[in-house]
Image (cartoon, rainbow, N blue to C red; front, side, top):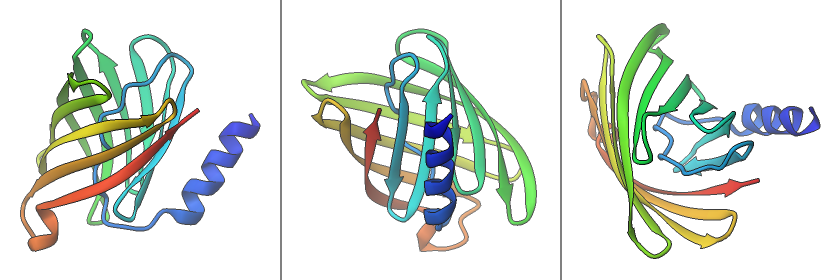
Length: 154
């Protein structure tokens, strides 16, 4: 319970940004990840072998592992003061020792978002992430960008 309260407090104190999507992380059962990409904070927790739940500044989401490398994604995002249900998928795979690559696509009737990236495992509980995101409708140069972030797992 204390872990959940601390995570929630950290999230609400530091959450600012434009809703940049969280990277695709590999977690073990019962593991929690807290991370940031640019100026956005996210928290996710792997409930069991197949289900991961997460929260970002403007989005709640769930991932369901269809197999080792493929996930279904569903969520709700506050999109310009209107909630929008979205769905999509992600694929991830090891590309080199300590390096996992991924691609994800989510969309709704209001937006589509494609992200490709890689997580480099620097320590047993710390990943560095680099990714590129393309967002439609494009409202400016900020919608398509490359970003770097970090994820702490516990």
